Image (cartoon, rainbow, N blue to C red; front, side, top):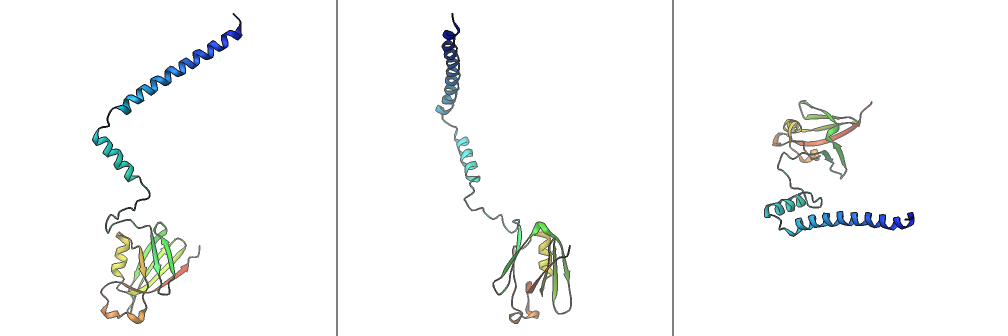
Length: 160
């Protein structure tokens, strides 16, 4: 026997071996697919598929939903966003005619001036507000305020 006649036989035996393995694999997998899937397993798979859908809106979990940033809305339409991971401290000053709430971020200092800011300061410790609207002081009566009212927001760059 010459080596040229063994070459086709060796290829044939390797292909037969591969074909046999592939047939066994397909037979096993087809048996799994031919059997009906239990109802609870199909519900579980469907639920997992729905939960991992990034296009559906995520439900709010209530008032304690985690907020990642604070947006200040000025009355002239300007907005500025501050990210809570960079918030270092919150300090409340109680002068006589209005309150000051100083928020120190890593790169900016945000000073909120207004009336009744003590509940707002407590809010920063728990659920973190997502939006604060700056109101015109002309339209607020300091003595009639029942909730926190911000009349000015001053942003300063922090010196490193």
